[in-house]
Each structure stands twice: as structure tokens, then as C-alpha cells.
Amino acid sequence: SSSQEPLPIHRLHQSLINRIAAGEIIHRPVSALKELLENCLDARATSIKITAKDGGMKLLQIQDNGCGIRRNDLPILAERFTTSKISSFSDLSRITTYGFRGEALASISHIAHLSVVTKTRSDAHAWKACYLDGVLVPSKQGQTPDPKPCAGVDGTIITIEDMFYNTPIRLSALRSPSEEYAKILDVVTKYAVHNPTISFLCKKAGSPSPEISTSPVSDVHQAIRSLYGHAIAKELLHVDVTSEQFNDGIDDPEKWSAEVYCTNANYQAKKMVFLLFINHRLVESSPLKRAIESVYSGFLPKGTFPFVYSSIEMDPRSVDVNVHPTKREVLFLNEEAIIERISDAIQQNVVGKSQSRVFEYQT
Ligand code: ADP
Ligand code: MG
Image 1 (cartoon, rainbow, N blue to C red):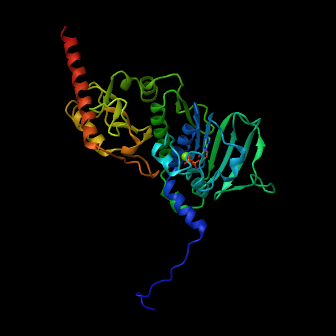
Image 2 (cartoon, rainbow, N blue to C red; image 1 turned 180 degrees about the horizontal axis):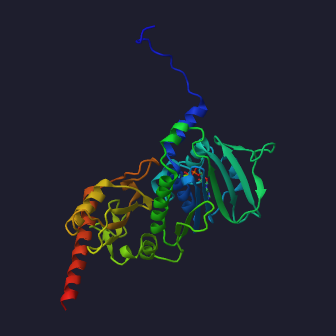
């Protein structure tokens, strides 16, 4: 037959469709970690403990002390589009949780072995459930798939094992376990800065000493000190920025505010450290990063960079944050104006501090 001849179209098996879809949401251990972390925060946890083996590829476990999951919800927990966070379309416009799509646990169950131990405050004991391809499976051969009572404390432990065991191409695209672990540490560190009243712990399985361990009674400044070090913390400026017109009491979608912690001209690093949260979500904005970089290029020696943590809050209607879980780059309304005001505020503060320093030295 000639090469012009079309091949017949046929339906893919559902299991293949699910695996492909899951691979688009969960790229690597850190994408699963971010989803699980956000679930812990949605569950109002005050303590989050992460354990990883082989950079999370062999094992990724997160324990939280949040609200737990009701036993009766366990059968559909890992089904696609099951969530406790929204129930109607209008809920979407006032969403206050990270999750709402009900896809994370389902996706994970298609590319790894997923198990859950959970206990609500009113449960007398915990429940354990195991999942594969969206449904409950027995944890041991010969058992029934339904959740089993077990010992456990209030909250939830999610365990993911052998990530991408069934998608070898994805597995081979991953870098070394140490690089995957570095990405996990980076995300946990950033969330720990943004949530200084939550205690975070992150360690390798079997290791007695965690790489990250924060105490819950701290503020952003203390969190930056303990996570990024004294050299940064001692040169940190705190800058508050708000939108120009503040129509108090009026529901103004153009209203926004930003809290920035950035280093002064005394701090000079080889690489820029840039943490950006918009409405509490970890995102990226290349235009904002570039604008801040160019402010600092006026103060810092060539090839040196600042540390900048920025938390922006705006009307949820003005921002398209992370609507798709893999989309980290964010788009928001009035982007240019907001970027300009934040850059100006940083500029003025860094100038101000440098001048007061010169003044101090002169007197
Ligand atoms: P989503 O977060 O979008 O709702 P997920 O697949 O991440 O979807 O989670 C599905 C549901 O499982 C959540 O809506 C929540 O009810 C429950 N859940 C997941 N993780 C936790 C947790 N750590 N603590 C309590 N409930 C959880
Ligand atoms: Mg979620």
C-alpha cells in the first residue's frame, strides 16, 4: 500500500488514556510533592513531614496533622474529579483552597502505588486504603480492597511508591535522585518561607537528620533566616506595596497588595533567589523577575544578584494562577502597572538604606 493511505482511527484503552493524562499533571516527584503539600495546607495542617527515598522516585511520603479524610469518602478518593473543595461552578470565582479539580490523587494512582492512612478528629482509630488506577485495591494478597482499621494519629499520611513504574519513558527522562531531591527541597523551602507558622520537616528515608526542619513559632524574617541563612537575613529589607487607589469598602477588582522581603546592596549572590507567591500559590513571573533584576543591576556589581521573596495578593478574578497544575508561569491583570510599582518600591528602599548607611558611616 502507498504511504498516502491513512491508518484507521481507533479508541485508546481507558487505562492508556488515564496514564497519559496523569503524566501531564505529574511530571516528576516534585510535581506530586507540590500537590500533596497543597492538600495538607487545604486540610489546615500545622505540621507537615516529608520523607523521600531516591529523590522521591522510590518513595515519597507526606504526613500532616490536618483534618483527615472521612472513612466513607475513601472509596472515591482516587477517582478522577472527586473533591471536597467545590460543588458548583460559581464556587470557582471565590475559591480559597489550592485544590478544586480533584485530579491529583487520581493522577498519582495511575503512575505509582498510592496508599493513605488517615484519621479525622472524631474517628476512634485510623483507616488505611491502597489505590491503583483510581480504585481501591487490597494492601495484601487475599484481602478485600476496602479500607482497613489501623493505628494512627489525627491527620493524613500519603505514601507514593515506585513513581512511573508503568511509564518507563517518563522514568528515564528523570534526572538523578539527588537532582529530584534538590527540587523537592526547593519547593518545601519556599512553602516554608511563605507559611512560617507551620512546621515543615523534610528528610531522606532512614536519615536521622532532616535537610529542612522549621519551628512553627516564627515570622517570615525568621523563616528566611533559618532556611536561607544569616547572610541573607541580616541584609533583608521589608517593603509593603499597595495599589494606588484604595477604595475602601468597595469591592474593587483592581485592588492588590504586595509584601516583599529583599536584600539590600550589601548582599551579592552569584544567582538570583526569587520566591513569588500570588494569592498564596507558588508561581513564576518572568516579567516581574526581570524587572526586579534590572532594579538591582543599578546597585550590585555585574554578575551578582539579590534574594527576593514576594507575596502578592489580588482579587482572584484578576489572576489566572495555576489554573492548570503544570502552568507555573502566571498571568494577571494590570501586570505592567503592578510590576512597575513593586520595582519602584524596591528601588526606593534599596536606595534609602544605602544612603542611610553612608550617612551612618559619616557621623
Ligand atoms: P483536590 O485537592 O483538587 O480536591 P486531590 O486529588 O488533591 O483533589 O484530593 C482529593 C480530595 O482528597 C480533596 O478534595 C480532599 O477532600 C481529600 N484530601 C487529599 N489530601 C488530603 C489531606 N492531606 N488531608 C485531608 N484531605 C485530603
Ligand atoms: Mg489537591
